[in-house]
Length: 169
Image 1 (cartoon, rainbow, N blue to C red):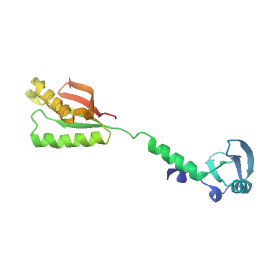
Image 2 (cartoon, one colour):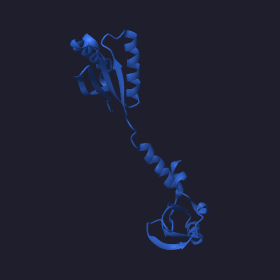
Image 3 (spheres, rainbow, N blue to C red):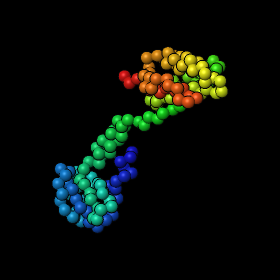
Image 4 (tube, helix red, strand yellow):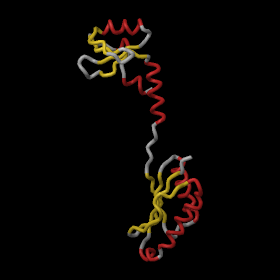
């Protein structure tokens, strides 16, 4: 667990004096570490070093098991980082290549990432942007109601791109 690596508890605290805070958040002042450990034992709590870099280190009386559980639970609830993944197509893409790239797009979307679908035009292909538009429309049609188009297909130089994201339930 993450919480256990960050804080020293009970007998792991090797300093002679600590600034003690009780379970209610009230400061009890600077006391010998042994007295703080005895007080924690007497109240059936743990002595947890919350600010090791201060002088003297700040320790708090708390139930460390509950604290570590709460920290782990909060970290699980945090949203995961979403990235923008780009998948590039060509206007005259073969069916197998298209299917393969669609598999990648589907995987990225199920992982919760945003996907930028890009059509790369070369040479005289740029005079037929409708070919690229057809491919991007086909991508959206195949993914159906599971996606939302954030940026509709737009031509930028020799590239036509759109951004799609998974729909949240």
